[in-house]
Amino acid sequence: MSRNMRLVLNVWRQKSASAPGQFVRYEANNVNDHMSFLEMLDVVNEELLAKGEDPIAFDHDCREGICGMCGVVIDGVPHGPSSGTTTCQLHMRTFKDGDELTVEPWRAGAFPVLRDLVVDRTALDRIIQAGGYVSVRTGSAPEANSLPIAKVDSDKAFDAATCIGCGACVAACPNASAALFTAAKIAHLALLPQGEPERQDRARKMVGQMDAEGFGHCTSHGECEAACPKGISIGFIAKMNRELLAAMAAAPNEVVTREK
Image 1 (cartoon, rainbow, N blue to C red):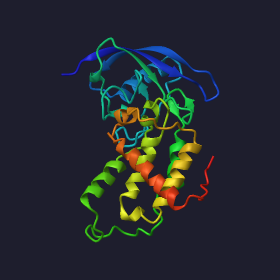
Image 2 (image 1 turned 30 degrees about the vertical axis):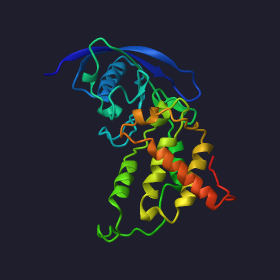
Image 3 (image 1 turned 135 degrees about the vertical axis):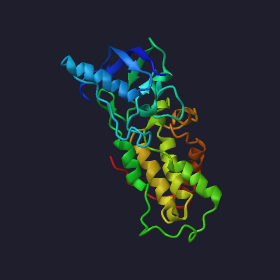
């Protein structure tokens, strides 16, 4: 049975990347507990528009927990208090009537705020562009059993491939590190034969680009794994480090080109 709630929201408002920002207090009335967090923000925005005020800007796309665009920090936790859940799949029944919530964007130097809750996450795209691909001719899908892959490797590759690139790991890390994201993308391809030809270049270039983007270093706090909506293990960071060490040992004088 559904119920209506009243919430108080302290939302970060910032008109542009160069403008100063501040928290603004709003009341969200008649919030149905079956709503998602984004649906609740939609209701607040409708009320703001009716009063002639600017709506709260926030990112979203699929609203199915697949794309990760919806990420915001709710009461200090990326994507909110429910583990393994994106913001768009976070239901209001998670909260209590009368709760006061603080809603803010990802906080990281590599994720500059564009407006309100919207940040520029193209730094993650540039890490992928640096090496998160295979250049072999793929063609049509081959017969499933034509290329034997050990189940333990295929399972691990699938676990890494579930990363949706939302950046919650960065927002949760005290150092604003992108190590979990980068590690998942490196491990996904390193575990499969299709990724073998560029394995060493991939590790060097993607880690080099991650550093060039200004992300912090991993110091094994584990907050990234706790905040990841897909539950990706920090064990992949250890694999990334091994991949990088092997790559640097094989070509110690290799120069990595980094995009700015």
